[in-house]
Length: 477
Ligand SMILES: [Zn+2]
Image (cartoon, rainbow, N blue to C red):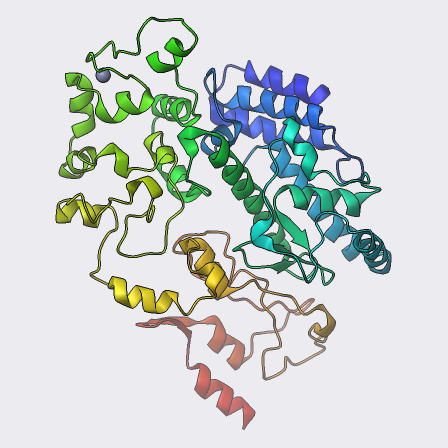
């Protein structure tokens, strides 16, 4: 209750939404989720907590989608408490077993007990990940179908239940699986990955569920959060307010007002068009001021304004970009179902096609199809992020073979292991991977070989350690 009151107070703080989102993350969420790892959160309570959070981070709307609000208005890491609770369950489990290794045996036994009774969230040989569906949001009556017959008896049961709600499942080797996602091991993935992977899966599950229930979000099962964040970062506070208002899926329109008799007609009051909804106002309204705004100031703006609305996915029309698709010859959002006409039947000018990413300059459709068939069948229609992740994999720490403690001179061959930043850098775009060696308590000068590794130089193929081969050979001999 205290957390809901805190979130409501934050909503009234006379600050920008960005500050309010930060306050929710740092003050209201810890209050509301305290102890959620060991005790269940009632759905009705989580529904009210989410509503209080949503009301604090965007301008008031009548029929918004919580999923769209959290995705567009979090101003940083997602503030959805339902995403945060899953992350907390996973990290607490990992932390407990790392600090008290004797617990591992106990945790395994409990998992096996749940497995024996056919509990939810368990991955077994017959699990068809594609058939798992994300649960409706907390408070929705249909969510009951995702509940286990037996109530969770403790942290493991609660974690399994939470995984089941995001259409994921836990295997007995402690890897977590989800359709079209690269599995990762909760105890052996690098710590910093755990805090990113599971919340992102929860967000995708939330988006997928919303896409099935809200017309303005249909067809989009994942948003490009990086594209959205960089677009919002370049906007003024006023523009951010307008964008998040529209992107919440709850913008008022004549069509909406007419639906319950508040107005007599759905006619646009600006241009007289027969059907004024938010798509009409943003993309089609013939009012001269809106037309001029749409044409913008650059040739690119004018080209983008010329795209027929049916070629744009519904979520993108209100400002939520779908995840980047892998096909090089289709638009960035891929073969959008309603834009199947794009680009084959509507002949867009070449510049526009290039602007939208439809180009066979680097890779023809035939070449792309040849590459695609190399992927496992279930990944062939995955988006670009999923395909790349499937190729890279997730780092796994080999905890049974930790490097030996070094007393004295460092060994010739580096016995280091990756901390995961090579495969999952925290800066997601254009990130340069880095490597480092850490010797506990070492304070002597660097050896020649270490210096050789420490001073990289740039080649056409990327960064390389200075004279790596020669130095290694020299030392070995
Ligand atoms: Zn109009």
